[in-house]
Image (cartoon, rainbow, N blue to C red; front, side, top):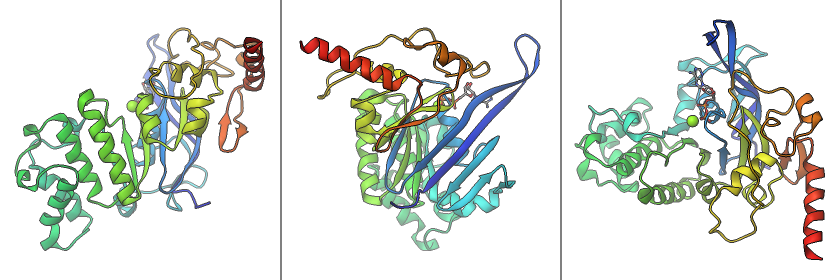
Length: 343
Ligand code: ADP
Ligand code: MG
């Protein structure tokens, strides 16, 4: 198997809080908690989980936009961050890597400078990273805009003159013009009208194939993830609860949380779906994470053990991992129910 392009080992990110609501100090938001993952060249890895589960924080740590609290991050074989060895690349040291890792943001309006024309927005990175000869910069920027469905004749217009979908196309052209290897797409569709979401998704799919891009695709829209991603990781309060191929996660989810998440996806797709289970309450605060299995306070199958002991990630199949004390038992129970229903 190829070496991973991105490797995360026991990544932690805490946000210290000066003073809690009750006036106590020294509190941490444990946004990312011992998170390990490898993303391989050419794959689209989907990271899903409720709002506040730490998805954006992971993306921003990889891009070095946030400084992790502990762990290790490697990109293309180069260590970006290693808390044990005291390695943390500076802005300048990151520059050559930064070209290789780009980001598509959720809100295209906020991510494009309203005072610049869109030609200059795409040209900025081409100049900074000296991607092409000076004389070629304008033409190249136009080429990338057109590849993303925006006519080069509109290069002198500013972002404010474009629709949300068009702005996202401009953001994609800006990222793509640097010929990156890796793209973090953080909820790239959620600020767009439903009518244009599929167009942008199709654009990203075709660019992915054309340029052999590797994606970390962050989303809470599970149908989009199902369409776009090869593998999926399910995040709960900063930790992976399940990891597997898209087929594993959609058709044979093992963790009760995954089952709940994906059972809420509308059932108009072919294939079997998990039985709908109920989720109790809201996601706990990342300041006050439950002991044992973090999910036990909401899990319909929780037992005493779950509140006492942290489940380790166990291999459930080829490339399929689950962190739940009871996954085997529950699978047997379900198999028993199905057999009973067949009689
Ligand atoms: P997601 O992208 O899955 O919605 P985030 O990564 O944005 O989640 O946030 C994870 C947790 O970290 C949340 O509890 C959030 O409130 C907290 N958080 C994120 N950024 C900050 C910050 N700059 N300061 C304090 N807490 C933060
Ligand atoms: Mg987010």
